[in-house]
Length: 346
Image (cartoon, rainbow, N blue to C red; front, side):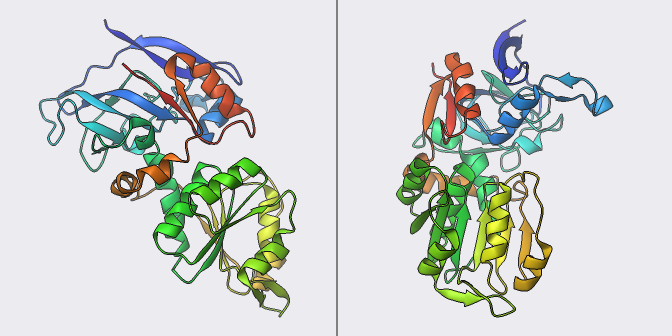
């Protein structure tokens, strides 16, 4: 039996690198050698929990979770019934297409492994091929960029809109890039970490707001002009808010900032807080939820190829697989890293 190394949750706040059986592809499967895999906030959530409840008895004992749902790698073996894929192809993966559960999110397999089995491998559904001009670490951004693109698509943002994105992590910065690529007139990014605001400017934001130090409403008014809510009370002229932070303070700020007819897209996992429904009513604020990527997972791939240098700026740390524990420590430490990608080289 051939084995491989794979990362899974250990105790609360820790990972385990374990030896597991290397998958053998069936006639409709492909085996991918993973070359890079990003760490996501969902991984961090599983780490805080120390696993996830067993599906057979939700709320019961925690079971380990194979981690990693942002993989990129190269095909090493394909089943006899697989078409459109060949050994040597470089691919990104749709973790939600796995029939045995979402890859890295409670499914049978995790992408933070030396090899990943792609069940029922199909180009355009479970994998997409990308050229060798794109480094594997940059290609591993495909999945989070699909989350960002879905949020922007849900927003309906147009060229004349004035937008603010709260949260300069990978999802928020990805959203800022997509907004500018579709020609949105003015994009502001707000965060509490100065280095992240610098990164926002580097990827194309028109302005930034340090929400720990600045009056956000006053700053948005200066940038987007003055408008009003449904009662005529003064508000910034911001048309669209994207919450990629999930902090209750963001929602409060949006409600206090929203002009008549403004929209809020909620893409971050929300922390507990109270919602000022009266404030929403006074602005007729439209709340739009954005979850995952129903169609966007491979729509982003050609754009990632075309604008790879811009998207590469989202990566703050590249950590070798042998130091996976350090990579997850970085991801677990607030403010220590923006986007951590684990690399698996020859």
